[in-house]
Length: 156
Image (cartoon, one colour):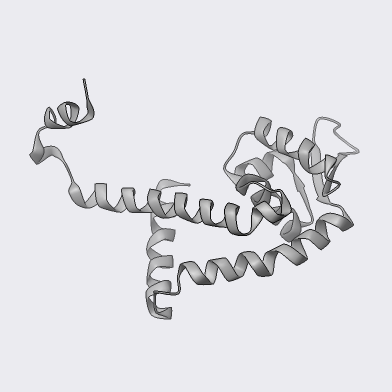
């Protein structure tokens, strides 16, 4: 059965087109943002979006438990572990075990990792500015407020 046939079987009055439009556009902008940043900024540093997200959190927090990093990046602990291996090979971060509980692992940036983030972030931020350049400052604030409401209401 093709998509059109599937959709035509749904009663039209049961569809909330406003919700469809909002969610579709959030998805499109998220994908577009990710693709733009990976192609125009992150590729130069050999980083994926998720690897950058992890490095950013390490840069901000300096030392963070892998479980909290997974939650912050919105990925599994296994994904954090796999990406950490790559970042360690690139000498951008290192693992540190908790002295009291060896099951708990922390991550931190190396000096090289800090330097990469100091070089990378201004370029990344320039991309952020370009993406929202068509919006006024007031529109940016309204969008931020509304997106935070969606995040908060859904516990994302």
